[in-house]
Length: 568
Image (cartoon, rainbow, N blue to C red):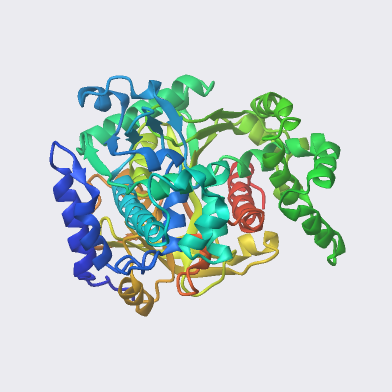
């Protein structure tokens, strides 16, 4: 019998969170330096060197990849849920500022070109994510700044005349660490190093609004924008399969546009060889039996569309998808969570990935179906609760909820797939027991490199920095090995969709009796925290991640098609 996990009582993490939430209640600016001591005190797994004098380059790179490049010029970070909130706070036209992006985190951000960055937040999870990242970045930037000063680079006189080898010598960094800085700053590497020599960072944060009503209003505006721009009528009356995944796997499996330009993609592979993928293709050809190149071509398509030659296909690909009932709404109002609304009746078996073909499929049933698939670009933390709550209240009927996303694993390897049927949610402190509609046999046939681990136990954490070894050890002792950020909030939203009351707190909640729809959860491992932190901190899964991503997506689509057509 599963039992509730006792409250962790990790006083350092609780103190840190209480500190920044109490400070953010102020109507004025909060100096990030006021958080540095409590931040360092938690000894976060992602920032174990916070309190030391030596730079923690892995933590710095992790934060930098999730913040915009302009952060080095920013003094004030404004947090708000919508343009209306910013306007009420005295910033009436933030969306006219310069749009900024981070390499590894989706958020709407706008820079005024001087010292202010406006960040749209989707839920409290964005606060739990942003505040530790800003604090980490400031701590580690300033360590590097003072190392340059001690290394003989004067802030204003010499920095402008020095080149990369001078900075590398003064920073006393290894080749790998110096290359990591080059990776995050790109063609701004040398100018950023010169700026690093000139200035400390002294960031301030101001939360313009933080009530549940503000988050709810922002989510409602997001959904209204989706309805107005998706090109599908009558969504409020139609049955829906809700999917939380990404914006590329489903369309590729359902439309196979890459097969229409396969010759062009292979020529691009030969001439440009991005990420040395020619070797990957060779390995597929030499395997026994030869492996499918479909995942490789899908990945090549994403990269090719970003080239000068490939851009011509962007509009054609979107038209091809729209003709097949796949409607994209990217960067909707308020929330940077893209949506795809897919009309199952318009899918064409000619363009389906062969791995989706089912025995006994009755395509006449699908052609007459009014059912939609609504796929959201997986949100962060509590935004998942808000989105599913909004959508489930705004459609005709939920026929299934399928959640796919990244997770850290304490017992597997990067690329493995975890299938949980128990989830502890840090937000609600509930332990959810649920009947996961997926088992290992649903995913394993489509996974080439990893292992599928079903009957797992997941823990939904509040933020990537809000964990330390003590935290993870408590869960590991209880058999929780799957660490992620969305399934708990999604299950809380499902509870409210199934029962006539708000989700409970600190209870064991059973979601497997007489459910009117599927619950499916698949996580692919992107990090192994007990293995030197290497993946989450310093690597992207890149092409390697396609294997587990597509294996999970195939399992989800097969389940939906089988339900609709009565096939197997």
